[in-house]
Length: 314
Image 1 (cartoon, rainbow, N blue to C red):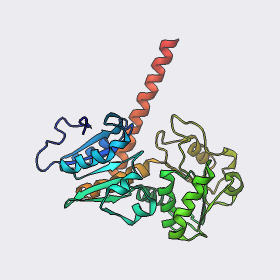
Image 2 (cartoon, helix red, strand yellow):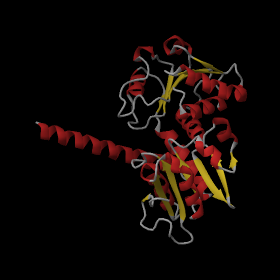
Image 3 (spheres, rainbow, N blue to C red):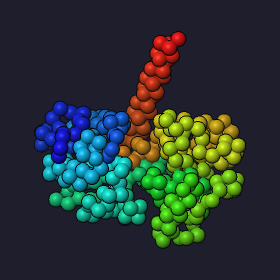
Image 4 (cartoon, rainbow, N blue to C red):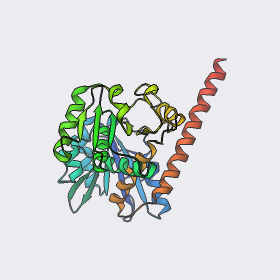
């Protein structure tokens, strides 16, 4: 490894025998909330767990993924999470992949056991559990999904696994939407997933709307479709979690729509990865509360900085 990883602990790779070492491999991950989620819950369960950041921007770029992964395995890590841009390439770096990882062509969690690498995808699990917890009993007859990228693939798999009768995929890149439909149709049936050429034309007949695009994030403000298309009776789900209350959710809530934010997906996928790493079931409700508390502090800090800048400018 060219350089040691960013670490929340000073003894990275050299802890006591009962220390469980995990981490995250990806590019531009210094702001990741994963270390806090995993280490906070571990401490509350009495587990000594270290969660390192292997930022490929500092370790030779995405091409260094295989080397970093091998080094983590050699150093006795229990496993690692994988994020952009390595989720697809990770599939070729494991000995055994779960059926979900194979179906999605992407891995976000790798565990090391008995000299082998096991690949998992907990993203779809995260969204499925977030939706069923946040919107119990939500109708899943016809659903419009905006976005067909990596996160969109996991969400689509989750929605179809939950029984969506018809899932319509809209993406500004029509070929991306078609690729996702072609990927999942053999698993769930060609009659259950199709490309939506125009979101405006199909949303009126849908039970639910899911946004898997980055529109709504703090750095990409706005809504992924015109607010005038929303109506009472349509449930709306997000995968964006900073901010938790996106403009889309705020507008939908004001109309009386049932909504679920993106925080649940982030926490549930982390909780399942935590279970795979440690063999212990985390307290998800506690993780959710801790996650929201940290986001509130982050938002308050960001607001204070903006106010300070405004005061200085004045």
